[in-house]
Figure 1 (tube, rainbow, N blue to C red):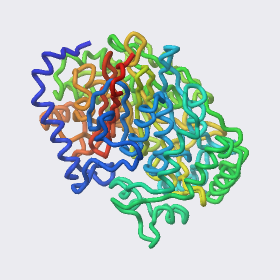
Figure 2: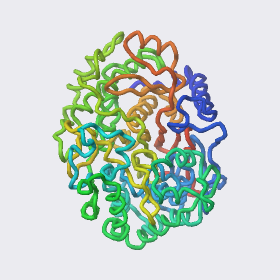
Figure 3: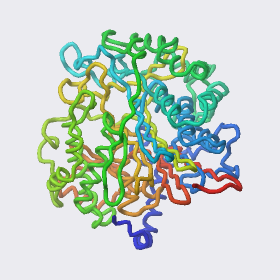
Figure 4: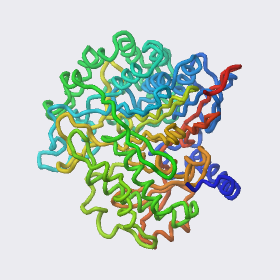
Length: 608
């Protein structure tokens, strides 16, 4: 593998520093195109200093906080400083990485309700140091047992407009997050549910400081809110919460109190589930196709063997289907290995061209073959085989594009939806346990519908199915829609060395992949790897790009057949942890309020 740390670090240090500073400046001033639609900090925003977590402070000698930090005894990297503080406290008290991740996710339901929560689902990749094993806890939402391939078509057989479809009861899948958290705790946790959910209860009841991004999402999504959501996201005077306000959610506090006492059964088989099913049915065009109480009662997570792909001298490990993310990430990185990407300079026209072409080719395979493996016979072993990927790499050449007419692989896109949102975070503890976890309610604020009296948003995850019937990702009864979430670990000699993931809909795949690429092939340190200017494309072409992609590279590759957006975007929100022998380095993408928090135990031994 071409890491060449000493030469590259000397050669690129000034360029890298300038790139990081420029991207951060653009983020902080809001001058990046699409700033308010994809989550770039406005000019008035700064990294959030308020954590609202009792017993936690970045000034405490046991903790170190920042965009990139190094510590010996534990690390958390997340978009939300409040949730990061909760997780860091769990680590300090002796909890393991799984305990901290569970507490963090409960807290996100309170402080980041626009991105994830118990009304949604996700994928948790867990490395257990004691057994030296990796498994994936799959809490993806399912369609109802009455779902049909045509349920997102109107009376004339045309696709419902996306903005309309996401608000229908048919779009709301059976949530899996809570069952996933409880399953992880029972398999790997060392702390009680009562301890891990209590910080979220306290924050919901007593209040927390609204950050700029939550305020932005409240204001941007009011037109799809139901009455319960509008009431929850408004203060006592009826005004929507804004940046710096103290927000409470007493309904969610009570919901969590019931879960604290009775576990997941309170949600899937009790009064909470009854209210959830009733709200879903209320918004259904045809209630028999939407989730009901029987669907909730039958839901369970699956424990999956992760996909594993050898890449240079490491192993890429992640959630398998129905999340296409880690598979496509691995395909792209393997294609780039066969294309000898390490022989081309970072930010060169050749690098960006090969990168775009590899994404297009791998994405064509995604759209052609991938879906829920319980319903679709997906040739994963063949798709990830060296022989097949070498054939695909042979299609790619400098000076021309694989795209000729239409989309790669033929046909037209079923739906180009790149703006679905999630949250990703990683946790590593002093014993070497590691969690890479991506969770979601799909669009920001999900369906826009909150369960009345319960305080949590309902997902619109089933619009991740293709709305036009036919193909491996069409809706079917009890099927899970294909996802792009990409919780990843990079292992060396069987032990995690790097974790990565991102929100961003379809852009998750390319954002996560490039963080790994820039870390390993180009030898960048964690923060530099996630702030290095990246690109996004898919099987139909057209390149979105971060500010910092050189004009020369865009002009040259345009002559070779690439089509670039006229202005830059902000792509992804990557969170990573680099796991060294003696220290952990966490990095959080600066285009939101992300923060890494490291733990140093005073007077104690280091990692072991």
